[in-house]
Image 1 (cartoon, rainbow, N blue to C red):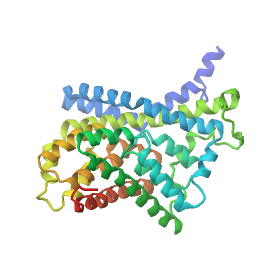
Image 2 (cartoon, rainbow, N blue to C red):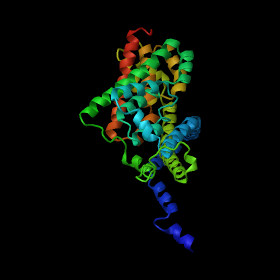
Image 3 (cartoon, helix red, strand yellow):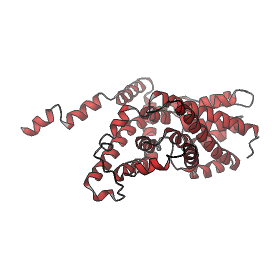
Image 4 (cartoon, rainbow, N blue to C red):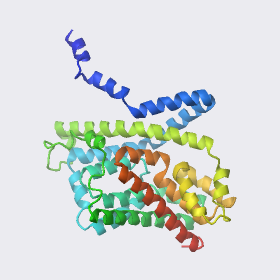
Length: 352
């Protein structure tokens, strides 16, 4: 009797979970899209579900590592050390963040848990934004695949573009913050995800072997669960939308607007690349093929850099994490940075 009463209690964890699921707008959006797709294009529904599951599976190792690092930082209290590393001289911290971001192995979605942890730990937004913009554009494995699929010069130029875009974004944030803006970038619900781990009774001293402390183990589990559930549902929605983009947007249509005869090829490539970008690895054969049928080198650079930063999965993940004004800045800095670096690459004639 007591168990049944507890389950029906307004404060019951089970009832709270059911209520949260029933009110979840992300779940509502997913269900609505599934129903509409089943009515409009039933064969595509199975393809989209399969594509979503495959994308989630492929990203799972990177996502799991990122969540584990973020939770480890909380459980060990080392997040304070991370904050200190990117604190101090803001210019030096921003430059360091852009350089590290350009060689980090995280994609635009996989880096989200780390960004949440850094912002939650009090790291200034400028170096975080520099890292955030630079990170998804290039990594060591991507460099090798890009050099093989498109060309060595293009791979080197893309790496330099990642660093330049990170620096541009970081210094732009520094200027805005100098005038008192962007003091609290995270959404309230994101801050709420780590309430237990960010509470005043959290251990202050750093303990690298957190598993020996029951309280720290609890913090690790709570942080991992909160970040995993919160971002997992958004990424599921993002990859489902990405599958629809793959199905209904033609690469021939893209090439028609970003050919060498169009003086606006680079801005159009950046704008088109932002929502229609697939992922770093899938984009390589796509861009290589588009260049063969007339896409300019600068337009190709704009497409891959803008797309890596502000693709649909990345944009939705960022929207779920930060406030609207930070989200708008993220998109604006990503697209503007991609166009500027693409123009420089175009003027160089594709040479480094």
